[in-house]
Image (cartoon, rainbow, N blue to C red; front, side):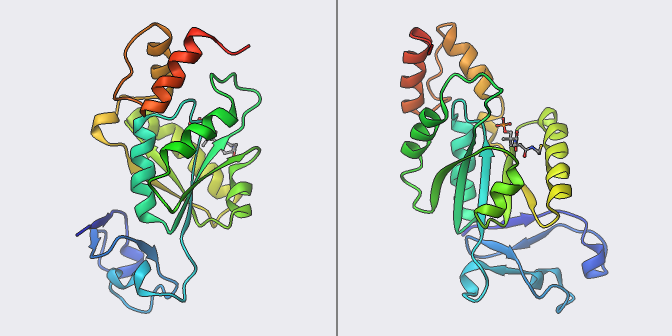
Length: 217
Ligand code: PNS
């Protein structure tokens, strides 16, 4: 049985001061539309399976994914259990020199998300909040590996909320095993002939070997 831990300051909702809350059982938790009807915080969250009247939870997991790592994949797997539909969105950043084209990144992602029927791969250009609105999504998922990620992520989340107040960012702590893994380091290690096995999915490892031996023009 899965349990979800929701941490935050809920004093205004409960009148009982901040305290961590857990909800169980079931795979998905969403904020309920009848906030405030029950003084207990627990009632402010509804299991996705309990209600068919509420809209479905659509989450966007955005990133450069140049390339996808096992840390990303772990987040995709966990995100797919939180949302009815998870869209992994590849940023098409023309200003940033990437190792793989957007098409190549999407191809690798599409391959690795096959075991997750509610996960799809998309691409976006421009503002993330516009893409979130265009896809009818409810929230953004981002991973945090260490304190060093926090400041950057906080800035992005605040900016996105300012641009689109209804859009929430949900942070998932990266799995301990991948807390040191980044696309940047993986590229560096691979380009210097190091072993990246176990840090990226096999398809990415294969493509990395090709790419570092024959850089794209
Ligand atoms: O994997 P990354 O490179 O850390 O992902 C960064 C990303 C894609 C989440 C961020 O750069 C982004 O959302 N870019 C889109 C442009 C945008 O919306 N900017 C305003 C908010 S910072």
